[in-house]
Image (cartoon, rainbow, N blue to C red; front, side, top):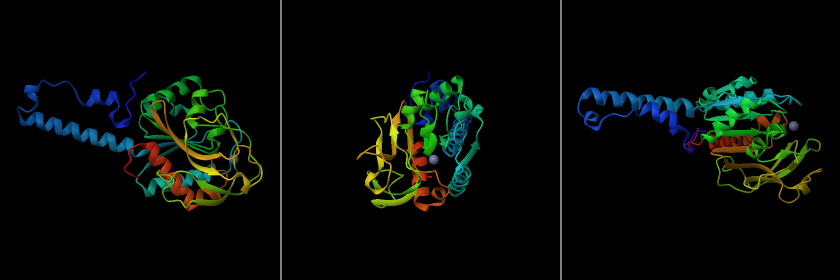
Amino acid sequence: MRTYIKSYWLAPEFKMRSMPTIPCKLLFSNILTKTFLCFLTTLFAISCTSREKAILVFSKTSGFRHGSIEAGISALQKIGIENDLKVTITEDARYFVEDSLQQYATVLFLNTTGDILNDVQQADFERYIQAGGGFVGVHAAADTEYDWPWYNKLVGAVFDGHPKVQEATLQIADYDHLSTTSLDSTWIKSDEWYNFRSINPDINILIKIDEDSYEGGTNGENHPISWFHEYDGGRAFYTEMGHTDDTFKNPKFLAHLKGGIQYAMGNGTGL
Ligand SMILES: [Zn+2]
């Protein structure tokens, strides 16, 4: 297991490659050495840039398949183009090996369902998060991997049924976050509103839903819809919205999602 380092761009294996042991007397002794250090610095910058600016979007399903996955992919590709962000789209679980995951600042589960990773892939994804990786869960990411408790805690809650798609009133609980800073205090929106069980008490709730504003809510006054938390060395953001195609065309939602990705990427400097 790797040592936890919060800033992913300072992952220990990279430090080992980029900062070899050089005797002090050689460090500043001649131009060649300075040139070599300059070369290393450039390599470091290139490496940081490529990892900071890449996300893996994973939409594999083994249960219900949302028709909005394609709309979600289009939205994420647009976010990528507008923000100079490399977006890799896949349903291939073979991406979940440590060497591959290390290329990405964040892994985004887009309406995944059911059992989608084998035990080896799960272990490698855990190591990715433990090394300071980012995770974004969208909608059915909470309807995924019921027999993997580590993942359920990473997402922050487990799907527990839903009523029909309908309009409801959302309340912003925390504006001091990249994903909510542009939102008004209440947000009336149509979507499929999940109920949750096994809510991780460590999540920081960003948006709640007013159960008096629609039919079928079972979580009571404290019914979270979006949240974030630091977890096992990494950062996780989840938004419940994303059942309908319209959600992925909604400018407010797109700003919310972009902010969540930005948080999970961890650079804090904006996309
Ligand atoms: Zn749904």
